[in-house]
Length: 239
Image 1: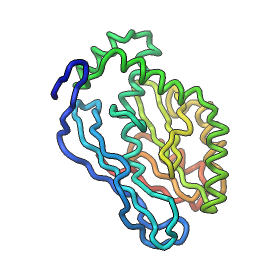
Image 2: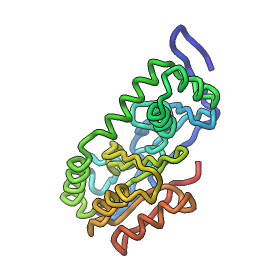
Image 3: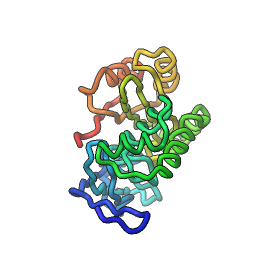
Image 4: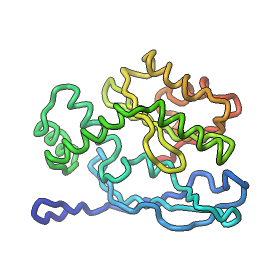
């Protein structure tokens, strides 16, 4: 770690390179080819380690359109535009909800090897709350509509982050990487969460769900019970 005034440059322990989980064009089925690197940044994780995450963008030479496809696994590691892991950001929200102040949260994260200023605690807390408070119904339905119009199907990327008794469910736009919804529940048996999952995952146009590794709790079995019978599931690769 190098420190320059109020800024810290975090050195990556290693580079992790990700390419799309599916290398076939969702429009024509032809092989996707590398186009350019969508993102390339150092991310701090709650393990105390920092890795450079390279997300490789691919496109279809046959369709020759503007679509660039990338790794859902790399996208879920951190919020777009930020260099702290998604779990770190959710931890800030969790400890804020428990009444912890900025300095106390900084101390907790520092003990985990995460270097962050109290100002960034506020910035990240506002960011996660903006996703929690967003009009997710409109965002998800607009995404579904666009997907059906362009691809005649829906692809979903969804992540589960657990922090003590809380579950953070993050719902992504598969094609842009934007967060469409962020739900917080008291475990996977929470009736409100199950109602939300049933509402949005029972759409017959859903063909693919990319999510957490299948052995993590019972999240994937719950999703498989809700989604259409022929939905294909792909798990995030182990990090």
